[in-house]
Image 1 (cartoon, rainbow, N blue to C red):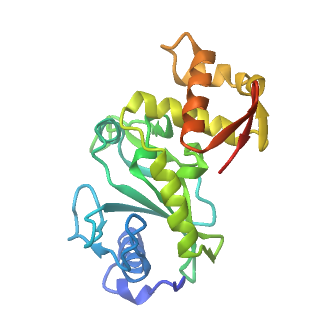
Image 2 (image 1 turned 30 degrees about the vertical axis):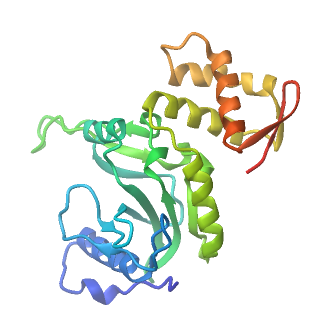
Amino acid sequence: MNLQMDINSATKYKSNSQKARVITEQWVTENMFCPRCGNEQISHFENNRPVADFFCPNCDNQYELKSISGAHLAKVNDGAYSTMIDRIMSMNNPDFFFMSYLKPNWIVHNFFFVPKHFFTPSIISKRKPLSPNARRAGWTGCHILLEEIPQNGRISIIENGHVTPKKDIVKKVSIANALFVADINNRGWLFDVLLCVEKLKNEFTLEEMYSFDNELSKLHPSNNNIRPKIRQQLQILRDKGIVEFTSRGKYRKVV
């Protein structure tokens, strides 16, 4: 995998945003395989497709690319807030690739894959509406908060300039697939609790999980039984092979 992007692929464009789009998409087309089925190449859709940028010619899975200049990937801009929430609620969104690259040399620094079932409303934040004087007055965009996605849903392909072996990526995708939950409410609870688990030591207790009561209450204000819900989600994470019970009220992370 060549981390150097080809800046000559965008010489006919004047806009910096257009140049970045062409250069980054060209790199993905030339270097990326399908994380879902392992096919050696993915293909680029025609320009201006409203939902996805790439598809796998073998399994037909679709991908959207978001890229930013700089070393750190914490959040990225996306389109209309209401549109993104509708897509998440209906699962009518593609999987995502997220890229950070370093200028002026246009080197890929970080690149990771997020399966679409890891998208929940809690990782989407509203941007300020456009001012009344703007051409699209009142339009409200959104940010995707990448650090609010559990680690099992952020599958690193390139991390700080180092390429992850393909066999490790395939293994991580398999673990991520095991965490698929179709119902949006159940999905939100599972990943919110998983994110709390990730903040604790490798071995942790139920009492330590209860310390996230207030945090989870803010995310799920209509639920008045937070602690039973925490226990329920830990049971699901155990069934999915993410944690294991070691003794009464004690747990250990497995992956």
